[in-house]
Image 1 (cartoon, rainbow, N blue to C red):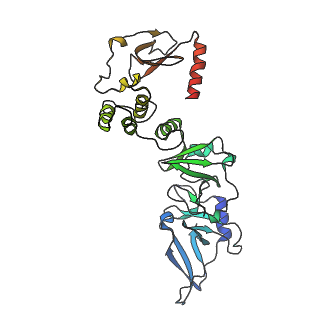
Image 2 (cartoon, helix red, strand yellow):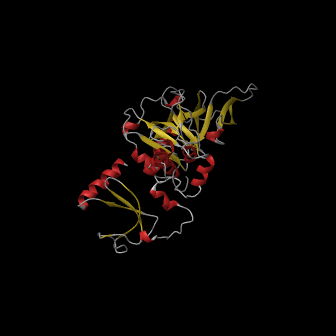
Image 3 (tube, rainbow, N blue to C red):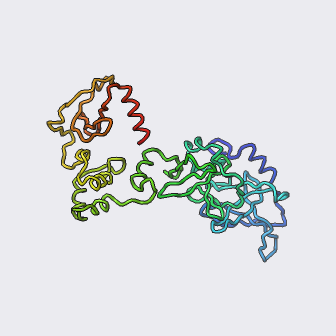
Length: 347
């Protein structure tokens, strides 16, 4: 029992009772350290040696599970160490069962790796599994729960099946499917895999671009612009407090200067030494949009205009300059909704 719950399911108890062996008085069962302590910790492997045999020849390997002695096989994965499987010694070629060490006892490996988040597990569909994998040729899980084959392909165990993942960047993994689209990108956070969210996706695009190649930093981009040296570029960037990630970043700022030769209008909201609640004379409510808003906000107060596009103009929120307002040039709010939705999807 563990935390008042059975460690082994009824099915697992049946497996143990089927494959267990009786201890033979003609043998000593000598505990040895397992050959992959990085994964199996202090789990002991018992070697059966004949009483009085000074050669210490091993007549079999065993582990203790649920108070029973069961045969265990050590399987070597080239370049990836060993892993252990229990089996029926009367039918050694039949089904094997992967085991792991939970810190106190040998248990059957979980149907789903502990490194797979519950949210990701629910998002895995049947078309994502890689079939015809010989589990006996896979390594034991590494520190991230990944199991490797001899060709350096890595897999995650999900519901007793496997998904193939490939590292494509710093903390980013691509789920490899037989049908390539749509792709699913995973992130490893707090030692568990999750599906990459929109914010993380945008942050990656800003850092490496759609091509996936590492881009220059804002400083390196800016110092290559005519009229700027590394010193003057560094000094200019030091005058702003840009977001560390997102669209309005120092990289976007440098890219705008490279394209137009001057700082973008939106950059002034990140200017240092600007009081948080500073509203210029032009920022005093230039307009008020009468909309059906929550009780705590009767309308929008438009502050400084910082940019415009084909469909509208961008203003600082005069009530709170941490926010921006886009005023659409549309005769109907229904048309504006369609435009806004389209822009969101394109973005």
